[in-house]
Image (cartoon, rainbow, N blue to C red; front, side, top):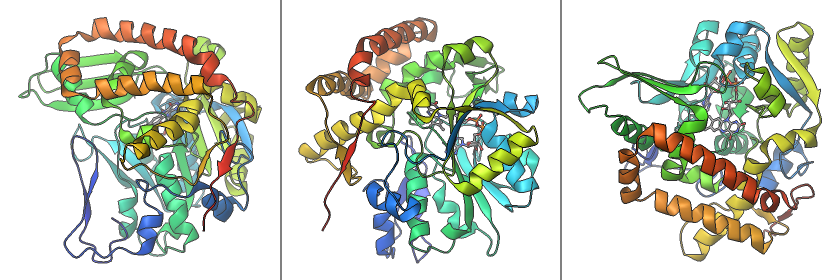
Length: 424
Ligand SMILES: Cc1cc2nc3c(=O)[nH]c(=O)nc-3n(C[C@H](O)[C@H](O)[C@H](O)COP(=O)(O)OP(=O)(O)OC[C@H]3O[C@@H](n4cnc5c(N)ncnc54)[C@H](O)[C@@H]3O)c2cc1C
């Protein structure tokens, strides 16, 4: 939308997330097609254009350093989704004069159930946008609003980060005002309709509007907290509200082949490990991918602003093996199945060297669940089951399935490689 020369097209909010609404006579350059996440950015070409080489790791991309830890300021750590590192780094970039503003995603704008990209120009505004937003948010359509001559940081999910790098590599002027790209490791996002379903299943009536929503409130890993005008407070542990995923997972989550946000200067995820989970407090895995971001992180560690310990790049992938496989092999299988049924699917210009038949069988079960879960009937049934029943039951089923499918999903991941498609 940001590229429409008429400036009249826009993104429209829908129960399935933001959708492009092209104005009559919209005038889009060829670059809009090249950077389109739905069409699929050519990843191998972008690795070469942006990093000058193909990835060192086909699982998590090019890495300068991997660390685990959290923001040293306890207030920032507590407000963050995992360890508050993203928020702390954005504040440091602003306060050290490296940027004039941070483009962040904030839940509650313009209404409690919506989320939008906003430009934060103060510490307080950056803190107000902390936490993860698990519904899709269009961010790059903010580019035309950037002030000429000013420099920005931005937080983006993987398909947006790749699109931005495509624009930057092609010399797009506003894209080049973005000095630092930060972003979460991204597994799955939910369609906004998930929240409506959640509210109805908790007996919240349509005439009792939501006044606030937090996706990761409280102690890490946090809970979904929704407050309504009548004073109702709904809380659901993060591990419980995962049951919404099979019913409302976004198509973009299923089609992306990038979990670790490979085109960010700084990628941050939850550091899932028995050690950190037992310790309590938020913990993040923190990956730098550019020399200039590595310098910022080293400076912050030296100044005691970040409590981070070095971690081995490959060993760190063990914390997220399940999701990496979900994207790298699962994403490829799902996209090729869609194409073989004549449906549109993104083409990233690469494919796994080998996908065992057993992995395809596992995918049949996963995708079958998503297809059934996405029907109106299944969502209707879900509304009738109390969360105190479905939350723990789904969590048990999820963990059993994870253990059962683990050998298949991890097999071949250590020496995983992509083949780059030949282009004319
Ligand atoms: C949709 C989604 C799925 C995720 N899936 C996983 C997963 O499977 N495994 C995992 O380990 N981690 C996942 N994460 C990352 C995790 O939830 C934290 O965001 C990450 O660990 C950063 O934590 P932090 O404490 O540094 O972030 P904070 O300090 O809380 O800062 C987060 C920053 O990201 C911005 N932001 C929040 N949501 C979005 C969004 N949707 N788009 C762009 N910017 C946003 C906020 O404005 C804020 O500036 C996911 C995040 C998202 C948004």
